[in-house]
Structures are given as structure tokens and as C-alpha cells.
Length: 167
Image (cartoon, rainbow, N blue to C red; front, side):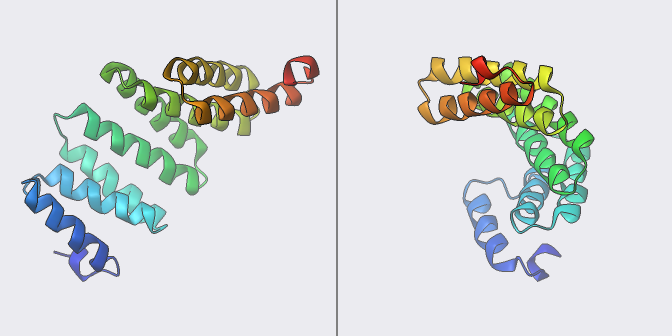
């Protein structure tokens, strides 16, 4: 109700109608999570954290939906400059993707973690995650993800002064 009176009314109204068609409009977790993700999309990071964490407290049996909220929370916390909480949610997101056997999601999560650790100058962890990202990208034949992983590995190797591997 409150969301329908917010500046996000137009987007949320269309989304809510879709939820009604899928009969998901009665799931508190789904409704709250959608609102939190819309807030994140519109750069209301603090509000999105409050709403998304409320969604986690409500809970759901769906590991996939919970993983989606972990991913959104990692993004929100990153945007707020809280890299510790962001990385903690990234690690939870990674665990969910592994549990679900979601290799594209796992590849994405490793890329995010590699970039996060690189930004914190934790090059050992950055290398490990970008290597995992590359292995998965090649296995999936995802050229874009493989290219991103190779580029990121080059940046890490350059940062540690390992120029032969950077090339």
C-alpha cells in the first residue's frame, strides 16, 4: 500500500499486476523483495537495504529467490560504500548458486567477488575468484564473461607486478 503512494508507483504498479497474474502477490517475501529491488534500481540504496533485509527476515523456502536478495543486498551495500557487508552477501550469493548448480550465476558471483577483493588490494583472493570465473566462463562458452575474467586477471597481475602473466 505504502509503495503504491511512493514515487515508484508507476513501476511498482506494473510489477504488482504481473505478480497478481502469476499468483505471487500474496507472498510477503516476494512483494517485499520486489519493492527492495525497485528501490535499488532507482538508487535508493539505504531504503533498499532496509526493505531487502526485512524480506530475508520474512523468509522463503525458495533458495533461488533468497539468492536474488543476497545479490541485490551486495549491490546495495557496495553502493553505500560498505564493502565488508557487500562481500559477505556476495559470498552467500555464491553459495546459493553452487547449491542450485547455477553455473552462469556462479560465474557472475566469482567475477563480482574478484572485483571486490581487487578493490580492497586482496590480490590473492581476487586471482582465485577471477580464475574460477574464467574456468566457468570457458566451460559455459560465454565469451563475454571469459573476456571480462581475462581482463580482470590482467589487472590483478599488473597490480602485483607479474607482467608476463598480465599479458
